[in-house]
Image (cartoon, rainbow, N blue to C red; front, top):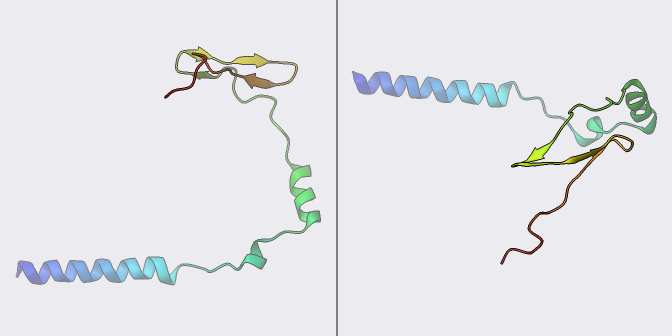
Length: 84
């Protein structure tokens, strides 16, 4: 009896998996994904760049230098040498 229940559950899982991955999937062609230059310009024109999303950034215990005039984080490698 346990074997019949286990087989039924397994078969139901297989059928459900096939239906979820195969039946619901909509294929998209490459040409449907491509936009023209006008659409790209509309997208970029409607977006606004955030000033700065973070106020500090650190790797390990090293806090990176932030140049406010350039809105850029700078870093340098510490230790001065290459690892073997």
